[in-house]
View 1 (tube, rainbow, N blue to C red):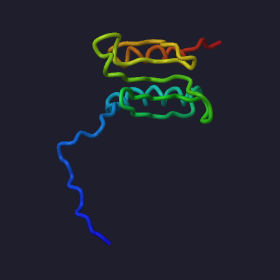
View 2: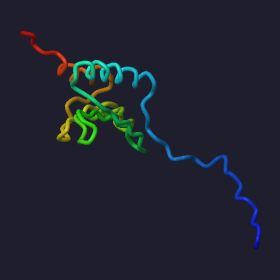
View 3: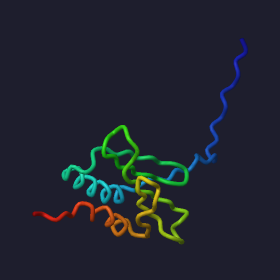
Length: 115
């Protein structure tokens, strides 16, 4: 049995970068999510932090495709906007630089006429 020395830790090696939502962004998203759950529209969510994009997916039921995806893409910061709301069919519903403004497209679904 040959004992080999441990491989030294390289302190300057970069870990793969991930895009994630900041706490303030999550507060805005979860406030909307709470209102939609209270209205009975949404039931579940999922968060993915990938290399190029962070995704907050909203589901009506747990075992189906997401109703909406709220995406954060830092590479689009200087172009169309950092945030996007994407529908179930893949259509971009709203894109912009301000998260609150982008999420207004989903808040309209909450407003209904009362008879």
